[in-house]
Amino acid sequence: YLSVNSQTAAQLHERIQSSSMDAKLEALKDLANSSRDVTFAQEFINLDGISLLTQMVESGTDFGDLLSFTLTAFVELMDHGIVSWDTFSVAFIKKIAGYVNKSAMDTAVLQRSLAILESMVLNSQDLYQKVAQEITIGQLIPHLQGPKPINDEMAHQLYVLQVLTFNLLEDRMMTKMDPQDQAQRDIIFELRRIAFDVECEPNNSGSIEKRKSMYTRDYKKLGFINHVNPAVDFTQIPPGMLALDNMLYFARHHQDAYIRIVLENSSREDKHECPFGRSSIELTKMLCEILKVGELRNENCHDFHPMFFTHDRSFEEFFCICIQLLNKTWKEMRATSEDFNKVMQVVREQIMRALTQKPNSLDQLKSRLQNLSYTEILKIRQSERMNQEDFQSRPILELREKIQPEIMELIKQQRLNRLCDGTCFRKISSRRRQDKFWYCRLSPNHKVLHYGDLEESPQGEVPHDSLQDKLPVADIKSVVTGKDCPHMKEKGALKQNKEVLELAFSILYESDEYLNFIAPDKHEYCVWTDGLNALLGKEMTSDFTKSDMDTLLSMEMKLRLLDLENIQIPEAPPPIPKEPSNYDFVYDCN
Image (cartoon, rainbow, N blue to C red; front, side):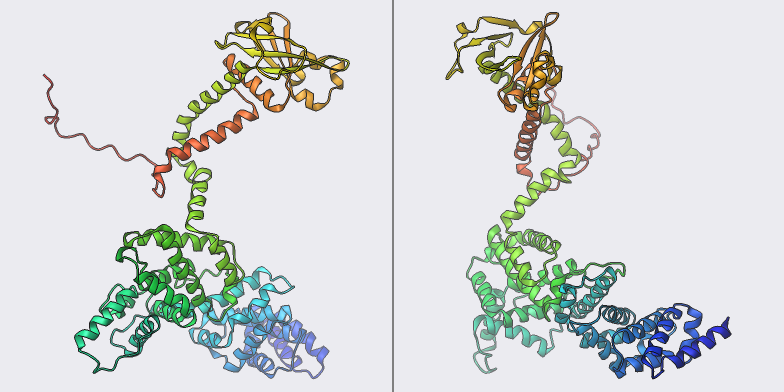
């Protein structure tokens, strides 16, 4: 078996170097298939086959199917883990990265190139740095928006390359600021200079105490936690130096917005100002948590955010959008310094909801965040609370069950009151529709139904004297609807349309006597069938009752829970405290 693989490997090694393009293509196809076998792969690698393939790629003479099968064979051979990824040259990396950066590249070549770069990033820290220098994230977006849809494997590979950029962020996130490092301190000086348009004072300008006082005043306006030495704020990791990088990027590339935020907050009362420095540090930390920067990678994850492929400094731009959102939300909440954590929670929810929709660009993200104001977040929370998980919690369900009988009684009283008002019904013969009417109403004491014929439809209240016939409620045996009604079983009634059938109901009294109705509309049908069932002590089952129950119950639940806004409702009641050791504290009434 080893001899056969050895011979096959030697033959393929020779055939892929053929001067005939057709013979070379067939050899590369065979090599791609054979390389899945680890024994063959070992024999081919022993012949320095990997070096031969990399030289073929670096030469750039192959293209189309020749290049595709060359890369496929390379991927299959490397997947066995026989050769270390650290052995490849920068020239090879540049060539593979070049295939990825081209927007009009063959899909098969693109997919194999992404697979190679993915493996480099995941298997070698040194190669990761080299790949980071070659891949331009902004050039990857055409692969997401192109006419050819990407498959799950390519989506995963693009995700890994996105992780590549996040690894760069991780390095900065885990770097502490050295308060003694002048270069790092100069960044803070630059933030002060841009915000307040001040020149760097020479060492001999004023006393040391005066300069320290000015610095402290300005650092306080900038919203740092440590007003004397802001460098201390960046010694906590995460977010470390990444927060300072974001602040400087915002100050330089969005200078007007930066100056407006700093000056706007420094002119407010101390407790109402939104501290830019502290907010930036906490926001950077939050964004890293949301995007899982610094966490272990899940190789089975195919999730990625397309907007991070649209800008070379996408994370910094993301921060700039979110810091302005934070300042806007602070004002909408009329927050004070004590509300800092509450504001950050709302901002986190705004960002998470916007990212869930997978915006394709940073501008699209900004647009969606503008629609997620603090007021809108409150509405969404309330809606979800009523309709989803919170509404299914045990205390809420118990409250709902307690309220339901009260609501049902309210609906019942409304139905009976409507029956007391009465309704005009049209008489329908078995032969044809006649313009004759009759009227029926319930007595105020709910004991008798009064009814009688009318010459025409009444314009106002019908006098009691005009209704000569009576039916005691006590004599009613049952209420039937639809096809079960006697007047719907008659031969002439069979010709009636479906609408009339749905509006028919009858009252059975004595032995075989019926009082037959055709309601004028669905609403009156529901009112009368519900009211009659209520009189008989039966359940009201109409669609109208279900709708009223949902509306009134939802409204009542919202009113009852109004004072519990933003308060977590526990699943279980609090524990009952232990009994006291004695009851001597009880007052003796005697």
